[in-house]
Amino acid sequence: MFIFSKPVTLRFGTADDAIWPPALSWYYNYKPLPEPKYKDIPQSEFEFVPMLWGAPETKGDTSFVTTIKDLIKSGVNITNVLGFNEPDAPYSWGGSYLDPITAAQVWVDNIKPLSDMGIRVGLPACTGGQDGLPWLRTFVRECSALVSTGNKKENCTFDFVTIHWYGSFEGLASHMGQYAAEFPNKTMWITEYNFAHQSLEDTQAFYKTSAEYFDRLDFVERYSLFGAFRSDVSNVGPNAAMLSNDGRLTDIGAWYLGKESTGIKPTDGQSVSVAVRHTMSIVSASLIGAAAISWGLF
Image 1: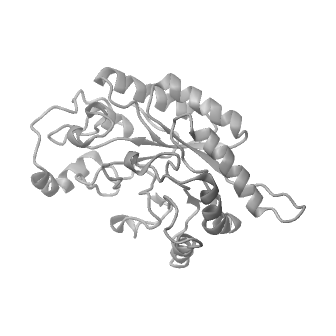
Image 2: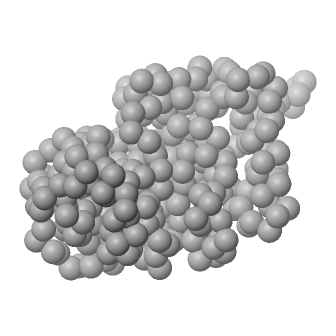
Image 3: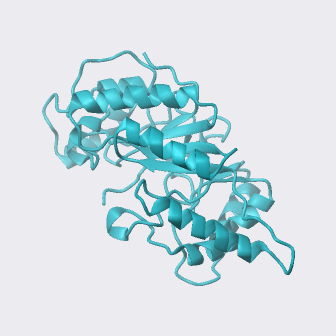
């Protein structure tokens, strides 16, 4: 059984919408506003973390910071905000495809005011590819130049680093080590991770090893598995699914909720049509007891 010592969440497809569970403590949906089904749940029970996914269409647009301030005025206690989603990747890969110079200006316009209010902000989440760190170095340099005035040099500040990874555990540990060296004394949120398109044995081994690793590291604050409810809608491979075809918890689904192994494989049971599956959503959601946040299937 896996009992997590750190806040965990799930982000996966819309077909198996779930009711809010006590097993999870936070979520994000790549958007500035919470999901309607969870908007009335206190932040102290199930925290929503807004995200500025990419750059607005209009230069100088500050609608993101306005939206977050309005949320706070309405009584939603926003304490953390996530930055750009994979700005070093093209739209076709799910990235926000944003150059670091433009990103720096958008950050100063929309994220810095929130940081000045005391809200914790996460560094943009680049891919695990070789372009990620160079992108971030340029971004931090350009952002620091924007917030500096005259001879007074300022640093573009952030509170935690966000990590995305879709390879082996050894690669994940190395990637995290590179970020720790690049940004010392910063905590980490692992906001997307999995060992994509692997055998069931390797997928499960990666899950267990990485979860135990995260829980041992003091600088890892939170982690969020990138998975799917069903094998036929998983873009990280069928073996990463948390429910079987007939809606039962797989081993990974059970482990993520701190439960015992079920011995159920993602492909077990008869697959149902999308139309039928939608009507079964509450049943499936009640079974898994997990928050299904829409992340879209690219």
